[in-house]
Length: 150
Image (cartoon, rainbow, N blue to C red; front, side, top):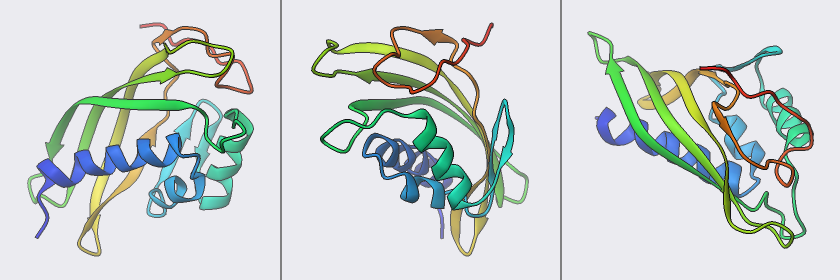
């Protein structure tokens, strides 16, 4: 039996851990029953999602992006049958590199759709939204992204 109050936040946290470890394949497999929706469209499949992250995120000599994605305030709304849910959560990214001190580099929110598949909670869709607040992301991203206006 699943407990959405525990299982859904844990899914959010496992995603953040995978991204901060630069284990993009592990993170992408979390979307095997769903997709990421970006400003460029919908991404499906492990290879497409991994390719996106590799084209966006700077990886340092230690094999990581030197970040911590801090996930907070998950607001979970279950469907009437308890088999699907939506979740809106806040994220804050901190980073420290050899050239940049520890700092907040961006903040925003995720809008997720989830479902129980084979007895476990899975992402069925994540809206990959531009940050609402930005700092110096020069040490994190390989490309420039616009800040989303509130």
